[in-house]
Length: 264
Image (cartoon, rainbow, N blue to C red; front, side, top):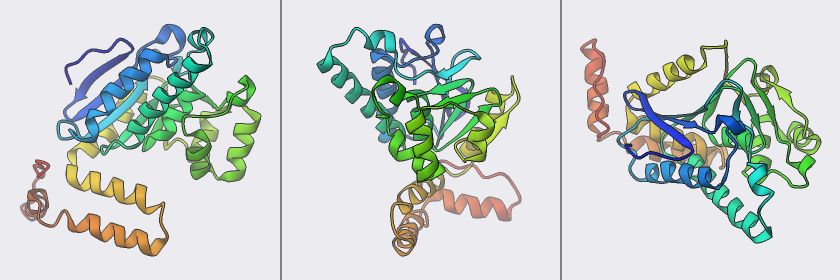
């Protein structure tokens, strides 16, 4: 991905891993209108053209904030119609993150508030630095979570805790986020990106069709009853039987070597 973006830094730090860095550290990486356009421009093509990369990492620039949420200074200049249109843009960008066929990992390098936390919750899983802080602050601002937070958070932490966090708008620690399942792993300062890229590289080394099919099976199967989910899993599984990667994986195992997956 060779395109440059005004609010994002997009790199490939290890082969097959796309790193997307929210790059507005002067405003705690808050999401403005341009950032919404840039996120959409990065993630929309991945829905169909997903063979160049095998995993995506989202993080923030600097060491203080992952993302402070919507840029309230910009929003203070918007009329009602402009606010609605901007929010529709944010919703669309977040849906492309959620629907990305590639695994998407959040590397939370600092505060993740409001829409920043909602962006984390759109990802498949997250690593965070131990000093990170989290909150859905919208009810303290006269609005409510509108980037999926009222839907994604309860699915992770349960209805009652989600109500407590959203209705009170109170911040919580990285340790709490880890205990409640929002964050999978806590990293020491200076280790977050290396830890996140290590798991991203491990995912990228696996068969890409298998990874995508397993992700979809988990995601959509959890929206079904168990019997229907298991039927969905079988259909996802059968699509890999005729692939070159399935043949290569078994052959490499028997030859005691690392497989060379091609995504075919």
